[in-house]
Figure 1 (cartoon, rainbow, N blue to C red):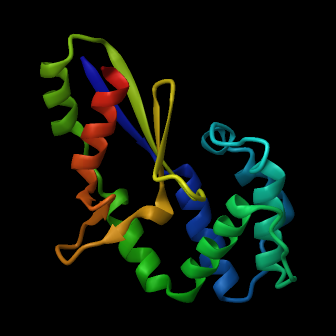
Figure 2 (figure 1 turned 90 degrees about the vertical axis):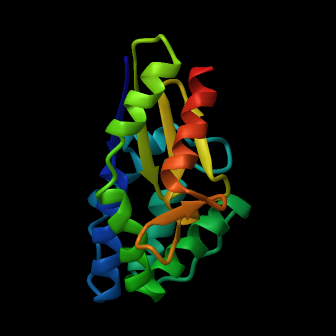
Amino acid sequence: MITLKTNLEAIEAMLYFWQATSEKEKVNEKFLTNLAELPVMQMVYDEEFTAESVRRILSGITNREPINPANRKEGRFFNNNLWMLEDLGLTSEMAQPIKQLNLDSLANQLSQEFAQDRTITVYFAPLHLEEAYVRGDALIINFFRLQPDFAGGVTIGGRPLVEYIADRVRQLLG
């Protein structure tokens, strides 16, 4: 049986960050450090994009300090966060569908296709360049790559979110 779980921990933290920062509140450095150390964030770090990258960029944004990204990944992360702050309505349109996401039907369908006992966690995280990452039994979707659609849902890579998740999980299981 295939089980699909969602994890929105990083996005819930970022929703607080964006809201507080837009209201000109300073977000505590400990909060930023804890966010940067979340397991989902740890799974996508490399030599160019680290926990310190996340902490430094978010700290600069919330403290309204000049930021000089060290590389393309940091630059994209910085720009994506500024984009969220420009229009919290858009941010909400991106977040609401994933907060209501129910993958039980997809899990049942995948259980019929694959004779495996696996639990896959679908994470949503604020990332940089890639649409998604697969790490072990984790599918990590870049929140910034979601696009609201006219039906009140979101798409990614030009496809409805559940369809995108289904394709990525099939690759993971195959």
